[in-house]
Image (cartoon, rainbow over all chains, first blue to last red; front, side):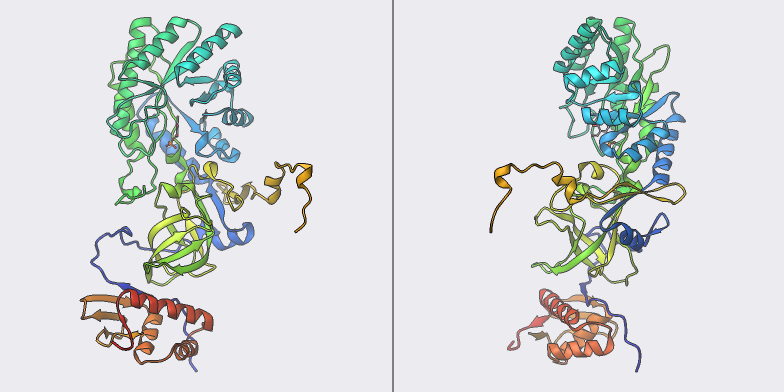
Length: 453
Length: 83
Ligand SMILES: Cc1ncc(COP(=O)(O)O)c(C=O)c1O
């Protein structure tokens, strides 16, 4: 008797012309069985499913490439790691080892940066939510305080007066770069004169050191040109301050927002094809600064707070197939143990997802769902995938930015995060949560302790 | 339900529905199930036949067969027994 053949699910597929359809371009699939030399199945066996994996090598490589892109074009450049993008201590420390300052937007992030050993004067404190206590601490530590609104400016003035300390400040400027939507809810507007007003208030108060100008024009920017517009507007403000007060602005902080190589939802072409490169952004910003009318004795330091573009492709999320189902419209649906509670960026991106084991050449249009009991738990609405079976493993790509900070403890506990170091060695940098992670914070009043059913 | 009798099925899994002008492909397992269906085998006969040639458990084969038939129906390749 001949040996039995290997079985795979039967599929039938309609043949259509080879045009890109709503399932995107035809994807040529290769299984991704290993991440940085570690077998996906071993990682899941040893650390559970799902599990995040971060590459230290890739982080450093991205960082160095970005630094080089700017430093070959401009004499003084400083990166500041955007904590909210990924504030796991181990991750922050890689950036700090590379020379990055810290960029924080809350008292909690500020304390984390201090705890990580960042000198106060190398912490940039952004955002609309700084308490009086936060501000006092930041003033005492000589941190760079980026004023977001007038209430904060007045509060800081009071703190300066009462404490006899001189806060080091910049203002956050929002401006029209021709890009929609315009991020005008943060900082002072350029076009209507608010920003210029705020600068005058600071200079007239005589109680603060105006050291910088800051903007962050948006997120996942696909146009490098917008940064050129923003940089020349900030340079113009700096020149106005120089002309009126003979005061030199020490730095111009262009924020972050450079697109990563992820594919935005609804985008026809993959992000890897349409996102500008770091060199494009660097070229736009540095040439705008150098061509501007700002003529100080020392050129201002250029600060970059890029987050996602530096880390997105340095992390993967590994998971497993729980079940397959057929939807009422005939589409296949596959349920993964990865939900939007840990893959928050599934709301923004059509993440690349690949099987972690060999498969045949047959593919099927599939909806990928998470395990949560909620309609919104959609990892990919439609993706052309090889046939996956229960227990198969998958790799979600480019998950380094915002997932390990915006993840929610909802229905399931948050999984482990692993770091593969430059020598291929594996480290657990955040343990998986357990029941007590949650219950330790809870308290049950005495009258609710006992019940009978 | 049975497979429409006017559809053409090639040996390598290419299907043509002259009624609609649409064409389809099936993988080898699908082709085998389709051919059994066209011969009028019952579900349990098909499952037994699949188990004879493949390493597959009966309940998996049954689930997949029902799913496959549902897809064929969605693609309008099935007809009611009395049509
Ligand atoms: C002020 C500021 N800087 C930097 C960043 C990092 O942005 P991205 O990750 O898009 O580069 C953000 C993110 O929203 C931000 O608000």
